[in-house]
Image (cartoon, rainbow, N blue to C red; front, side, top):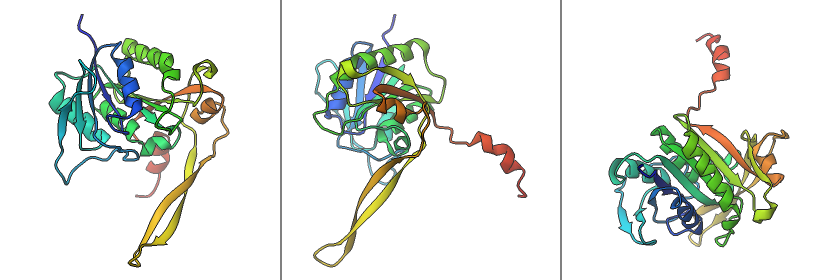
Length: 254
């Protein structure tokens, strides 16, 4: 029986510790191809490269793994992989492990999750993995057995077309992670602040910072699961239609 073909990508760059950990896990499940950005692309969301050329160079990091460093965004990586690089359509795309959480509203900004969503658009089962630790030296081994369980379940059951999984992992040791919870996305937002400055020539510039505000007190959210020591799984889809509002909108006088 043919081994599953697995595409691995991320937004932190092809040499980031998170993707190296995910590649090691993926090798246990099938034939692995890696197509990832050649430099950090965090916060790129679903951006694609339109006004400049794309380079995608084969590199050698781990023996026996086909790896390509792409000059574009995470979404570019998936598009190029499916269209130009992989020998066939992959059975699974896994993105991450991201350095930092992509729970709640962060899914909108995340290059990690946008890569997974792009795979979903192509009809590929996809998972985005994120660890709530921004440190370059974060402990990715603590969640290894849980990631393996999730990958195994997705390979067994497949995902409906257009549905991908957003998996977020708390910053805990393995024995402190209580398990896995299927959740909904919490209602939260970033309250941005901009530090206004001037350069030596008098030109104004800004540094953005912000504070994350969880507005959701529900017990079934990804933020609640993470706070309680669980790994959260939220099913995500690229169809952004607010279906519940369609009947009301149709009653407006257009």
